[in-house]
Amino acid sequence: MIYELRVYHAAPGKLPALIERFANHTVPIWKTHDFRPVGFWTVDIGENTNDFYYMLEWDDMNHRDRASATFMADPKWLAARAASEKDGALLAGVSRTILKPTEFSKLK
Image 1 (cartoon, rainbow, N blue to C red):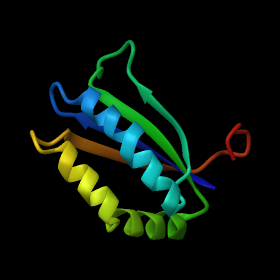
Image 2 (image 1 turned 60 degrees about the horizontal axis):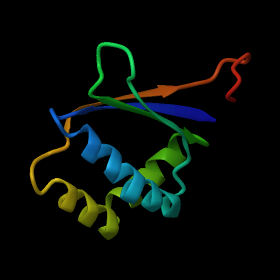
Image 3 (image 1 turned 180 degrees about the horizontal axis):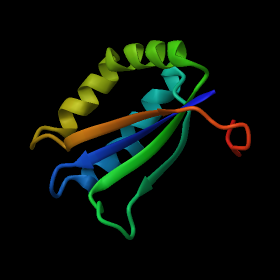
């Protein structure tokens, strides 16, 4: 297994809309493309309270690449993204990190 940590830096004032899009559109569509979310977080105390963190579990990079390609081409996703951004982009930036568990990690 590998894990992908993504940090979405929401545009000012757009974090609630980003979370709504994930809850009502992104995650349900992911289920049809074999995405495996581990968890989702916002910053309660810290410097980046406008960031949205989440982690995905993948079998390997091929699994990630296949699932990502089919998701990005999904008409339901394209429509949901367009509708959610009708008043402007929700993201100011994205950070992605691929993590490999150590032998003593709780997540393998």
